[in-house]
Length: 63
Image: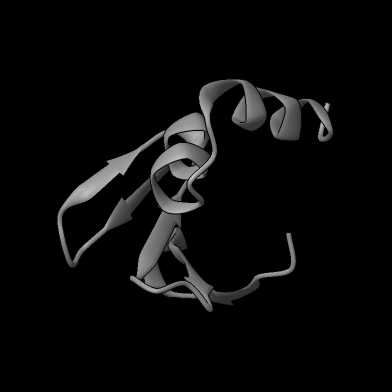
């Protein structure tokens, strides 16, 4: 999807280039700004603006 990642302490990864900060750890993401978070499907829907079926199709590309 073209986003840069920055490794943080404690195994956290920050996604750079989004309108809000997003931190990923293991299988979950969180946005410290508005305290939202969730799994990969939630990320694609809430942060990237995809519909559920679009998010599932995008994730299938990685399987």
